[in-house]
Length: 378
Image (cartoon, rainbow, N blue to C red; front, side, top):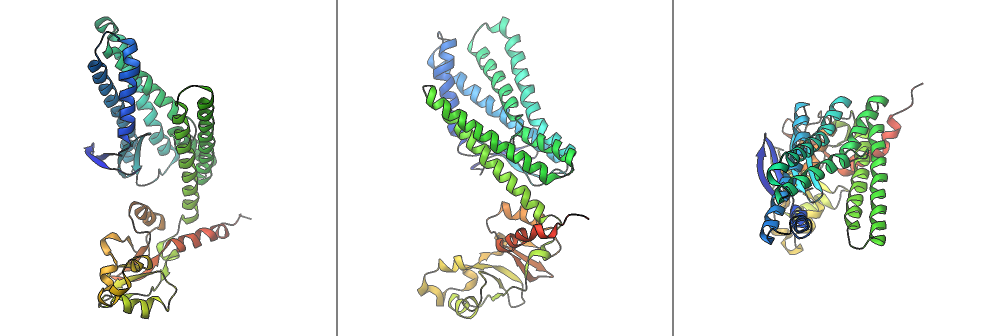
């Protein structure tokens, strides 16, 4: 989920929000201020109900942030870098830049989130109980009660044994520990996630048909999100298994055709592009150092009449926006960097010279042949 607004850093972790947070924030405030609070505190003003709804919504998102921050901090303690946390309409995402090295680390990272939500629920519940003799049945107690319930519900829901929920990651850690096979564990957790997601969709559709209102739409939306995310996690786990142990040099297309920076677009097309089957070309200086990357798609965006007067370097993606790797880096480490950027091709550079390119086609070719590399032992 993309970050639209950066809020800052907390304990060294970047915090941001997606614009969709505004939707759920407004729905929570409206639902509490116009629905729940007027029923339990009819003597209070509309302004008081609205303020209580705003406070409840803010504390709810603070609870979500605490949940995700706990994942991030435990991940860092287990040697995993954290890109940041993004809050969005259906919760939050802690973006980790690696994978747990052991089942135990996976279990700790996954389990701490629901634990924090449960502790927060119990804490708000304790405050609700203690405040009974002081506040009576006022709005403050209602806010505390709602926060207690919603945090416990969040903890329980996240413990469902289905990826990408925390319970699915706990299931993956336990299966990994039991089977000794990380990929098999991830695929099983992914299948459980898809089943759970479709079950939520079915329950949502049934609620829409049988119960007045549109409450079932949330179950349908959440169910589709879980099912799709689970399928993506399963596919990614299989990709990781297929590429595990490979270096960049094992996959790259070596000795790519390079374009001198002095060429214009017309010269590049006539002399280099048309006679060859490649779709991407490094642009290099007279000394052979990489300056950028040209693709057929970028050239097609240049009007034909501008080809003779447009330099090929001007069309190229600047080098600072192109993923760079060395031939001996682990391929999976490089692909994690590619996932964070915009360009899907990787320039392979050694001693300042371009020695290869890794394209999506190269990756697909290796994955297609992955079953041939793994043979059953005798």
